[in-house]
Length: 494
Image 1: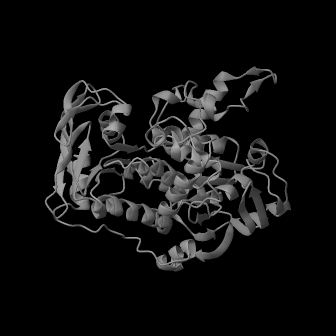
Image 2 (image 1 turned 90 degrees about the horizontal axis):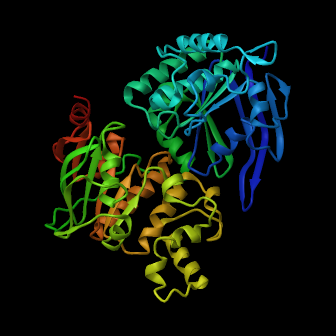
Image 3 (image 1 turned 90 degrees about the vertical axis):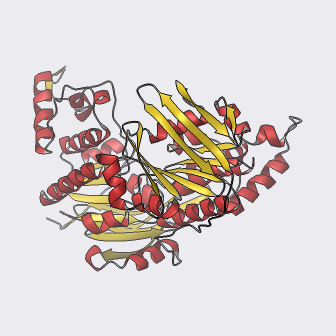
C-alpha cells in the first residue's frame, strides 16, 4: 500500500486571462497534515478544486494511492475518497443533520425507500465518533457555525474519505472551537486520513501542520517540514519580498475634531446602549466573539439595519442613517462578506469600482467609458490591485484583490469615515500588510476609521482605542497604551 495517498505531477490550469497553475507538483501522505500556503491568487484554491473535481486540469497527472486517475466531477472525487470542507458550508439549512450527512447516498430499503431509522442511527454514530452530543434529527438552521463545520466533517466520513481538504476552517470559530477542531484533526490523522489544510494564520500552521508547500503566481516554490519552518523564509517565498508580519501603524497625537459620534444606540434584542466616538486620523478598534454585536453595530450606523433608540452624529450634526444618506455624509462601509455584500462577482473590476461613485462623478448622467477606465486604472495603481485589466471579471480575482476592489469604489468618492468589518479575513500575509498600509494612509490624510476584527494582534497593533463587545453591549474600553491580549479576552469572555 502506497504511503502517498495523493500525487499531483506537473499540474497546469488556465482561466481567461490567468494562468492559475503552472506545472505544480504536490503530494499527500497517510496520516499527515500538508499545509498549502501562498498569497491570494497564488493557486491554492485552484489546486484544491482540481483535487475536489470542481475544476479539470489542462495537463499533468493525478495519482490516488498510486493509481493514475482522472477526476471528472465533485461527485466522482467523493467516490474516490476525496472530501472538501470549504469556508462556505455546502449544507441545506432546512434539512436535518442526518439528511445533510447522507444527502445523495441515503440508506435504502429494497433499493427504493429511504431507511430513515438506519439513516438517523448511522448519523448519530458518526456524530458520536466526532464527540458531538447533538441529535441528528435537528435542523441545520438550529445549530451553531462550529457544529455546522462538524456536520461537514461527518458528511465526509460518511463517504469513507481518505483525503480531506480544509479550506480556512477556523475563520468563523472561537478559540475553544479551534482547539476542538485541532484535536479532531489529530484524531483523523491517527486513522490514516491525509489532510490538506489551507490557512493564512502562521500560528495554526505551526501547531497543526506536518509539511508546508508554498505556491506563488501559480507555481510551486518550496516544500518544508513544519518543524524546520523559518517564518521569514516562508513569507519571503509567498511574497518575494521581506514583510514585517507584525506591522503596526504610524501614530500621531495631534488634537483633531470628532468625525463620528454614536450615542446610546440600541436595536432591541441585538445591541444595547452603544456609545463611542471616532476622531480624524484615528482608528477605533472593535473586538469581540462571534455574535457579540460588532457587525450589527456597524450595519446600524451605516443604515443597513434600523435602530430602535439612540443618535448618530457626523461632525456634530445628527443624521438619520440609511445607506444613501450615509454615503452622502461621507461614510464608507467595507463589509465582512465581500462576495455577498460588497461585490457583483459577474461584473468587471471597472463596473464594480464605479458602482458607488458613478452618480457623483457623472452628474449629467452621461457616462464616459474612457473616464471610467482612467479612474479605475488610478484605483488599481493606488491599491496595487493585481488584475490583467480593468475589464477582468471580479470573480476571477484573488480574495485580497477582491477586497481591494470593495475599498476602491469608495476612494473615488473621497469618503471621510471608513467602517472596515474584518478587512483581512481570508487574505494572505502580503495582502494584510497592504491593507495595513492603506489604512495607515487613510488616517494620515485625516480619515476616521472603525476597524472590526477577530484577530487580537491586528486590533492591538492598529487601534488608537479599543472597544470590546459582549452580548450586544460594550464590555470594556481600552486606550492603546493599556490594552493587552489578556484584557481583551477577559472582557470578551467574562
